[in-house]
Image 1 (cartoon, rainbow, N blue to C red):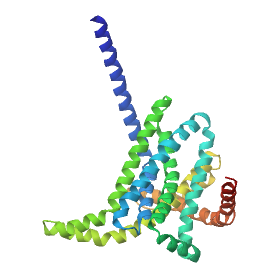
Image 2: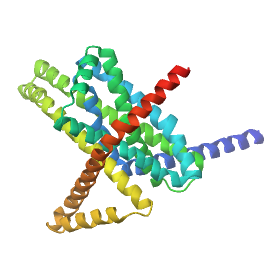
Image 3: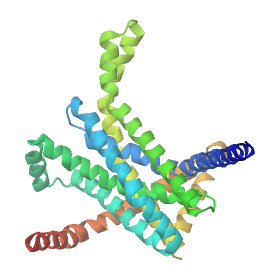
Image 4: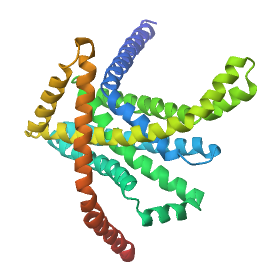
Amino acid sequence: MSGLLALLDDVAAIAKVAAASIDDVAAQAAKAGAKAAGAVIDDAAVTPKYVHGFEASRELPIIWKITKGSLKNKLVFLLPAGLLLSNFAPWLVAPLLMLGGCYLCFEGAEKIYHVWVPHDEDHSHDQAVAGQPTLLEEKRAAGAIKTDFILSAEIMTIALAAIPDSNFWMEAATLATVGVGITVAVYGTVALIVKADDIGLYMSENGRFAITRWLGRGLVHAMPGFMKVLTTVGTAAMLWVGGSIIIHGLEQLGMGWLGHHIHDWAFAMGHMVSESWRGTVEWFSKAAMDGVFGLTLGMLLIPLIKQVIEPVWVRIKGSSKNTA
């Protein structure tokens, strides 16, 4: 009997430790997720453009496909890679993030360049793909997952940096919690955004009160314009996040002059307004300068990637297929 009581005491003690560990993971995940809020907002702003133009019945399946890809990015690739790099090669984190930042700058700049200089070949290719809905879905989802990988890397790195020093398994559990929680929050929000017009249509046709029907009609009329604005915000977010990643990486590598100048210029702009608006003006000024830097870098990368890197990559892929 005494042995059974001792065993129960041990089980209770283990349960208390486990509960405390869960609480610690939840608390650390909440703090780390808050630190990554900026990149999370960018992720939510970027994604809706990938479902723009599809039939309403295909929007949620595409978002679900992107959601699964995002979870795979975070849990299968980025979580173990982040833990290994932070423990064994922390000096590699900044250069790898900077490569991802360069990709975001390139993608954002390319979209703006194609608005200024329409590309007939790309347009005809899009029209050809548009005649095959399944192929177009795969192309859009793959593009979204590729962009998500860069933004997720930024989110997971920020979260990892915000976790207090602890053991390997605590860090892994916290990062996994952050990854799953942020993915659900981002793509749940995206799903609500892209289905808002359908919700509005239902309210306008089935609302019991006049105010409900009026709100529904307003939602239906507002969503096309809102989606266009969100697409623009998503492109700007790519440039902002990409530019800020590069600038921050340069600071970590000992080349912080640009970051220091941007900080000083934003600080000066903030002090041109009243104290109540100072923080807001500083933040927007810094974000705008990061975005301009990202756009400039992206424009410089377009010919390098289009004329050098992509042809080389196509040849490598072609040679590997021929060998196989």
